[in-house]
Image (cartoon, rainbow, N blue to C red; front, side, top):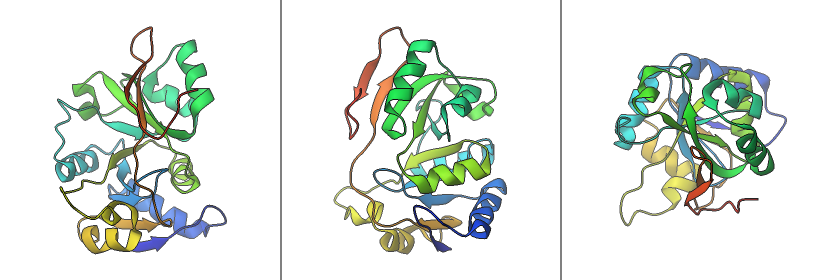
Length: 202
């Protein structure tokens, strides 16, 4: 299914349908503040496992990332001290992934590793979905083959052409942009930029 959403004034029934798909363990592709990404209800372990298979990701070796709709919601799923909270407050929403220690509220698949990536993209579509879902969304960038046209991670119609039969829903939120989030490790007393992406840390 290909569904068009806008930055505001979306039909509440469409948003509820999307939330129902995710609550039922469905997989979606949706816009972020960079390339489009795979997503699911992060507390539905089988859906998380399916995305890991699509990505070829081993959760025992790679950190998983979730989207939370606000800073207070993050505190349910990740531990952060006062300095980390202030850092995130200055920079979110935005193109950042903050690595924090996860909590026991996350499914077992997340606890294979102690750390978790936290995102709050500067994209009102996915943030609105997360608020309505009232749960974190697992997020993983679309896999891209070597030499493949970047349109398959930024153009909703090309994305649907390639992935439409592999997922339950593709959300057309307009063209994405090539890029990636800046990854910041906050698990020690000093913040460490692991990968410099689109975000300039304030």
